[in-house]
Length: 492
Image (cartoon, rainbow, N blue to C red; front, side, top):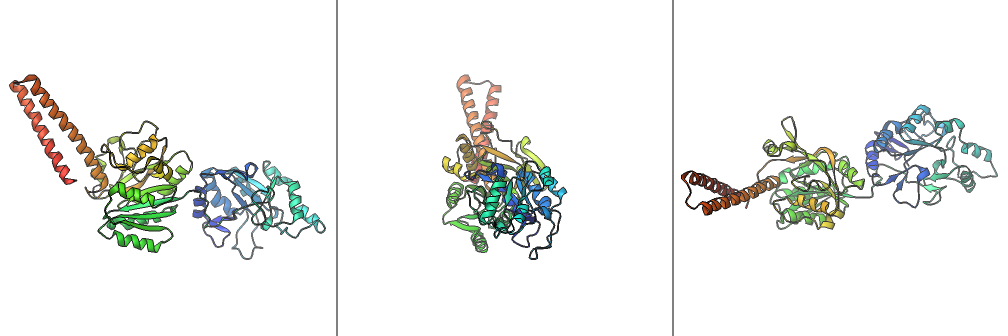
């Protein structure tokens, strides 16, 4: 149950727009229905209701409800339509919706329901006195029924209170009724509702963002702040320190002290590397959804929102996006990607790398999503978490590939919402790419060596021309071997 939705929240009866939007996001895994379709025995069913119907519901709540295509109920008090709330001395001045505004709300998915004519207290009303006035309060004007022929079958008790006589009268006149305090969860004529405030959490699934640092303390604050600025905050932020020897520990502990209910800090006393650290970090969480962020990277402010809304649909276990390269080595790294993966260059500072849309069975080779993709903890547990690098494939790509092979789907979120800093040849993606190139050159060198030996075995004493060609191939082979040895020493 909502009353007012606005950019400000002066009392508990006003929910600010950002909180309302967050709450609507977390209803994506529920079945939002009209009251006529509501089943109290179905835990997935949710009904969104508004009491009083203020004009700010049309201005601020309706566009968000339309975005999510949620139906909603409008409990209207007839004599208050278009009026000011002058009678409500404890609330800031605001206006009730006019007939025209109510009509616009119906177009956006609303349905009119009855909240009495004047919004009186009904808990002291009995058959033996003033019952005529009560009947008048329960009677719906025909012009209102004409405005919404499919509505006005349900009743909301003003202030949530009613007498036994009122309850019986409502049962005779309406298909059902709702309260906010005096009812229960099963009686269709006195169903209780949750009074929603800014702090109300309507989510059924939790999210953990894990920020991993190994000697990236100089970037860590930027990464943490990018998560703190999300339009939808995760339920938990874990800063995972893989035995760093820089300021990571001090920064991680400081953030944990500043936000004790949100941020935790954990440290490996010995360096475990990517696989060991990532698996240990996940085991320290209990959230249903997880995403990793390297301490040298950043999230755009709506990254978590877009990913979790995608996953709450229940159709996919992995949500991924494109990303933007930035930093001193961004341009060089950008041009190492295949041409069809290179997206926009923005102000010669950001270089977008695009991924294809997921199609089951068609994207199991190459790199098809980044390591900060959000995924289901259940899928992670099912496939056994991160495993050591295999065949030159990064650990995260290997994890996602195994999830997909196990029957899970991935879904791409349109847009580049991860910012991937390129600052050193030592960072994981550069090392990964170089190791992949080394694997290619090793295989190529072996093919050249085999070809030279085959030629010598087949021709014995070669003609001068063939001998020169053979020597040239050997020289090329020896050169590649030297390159391989140099890079191998570099990344050992």
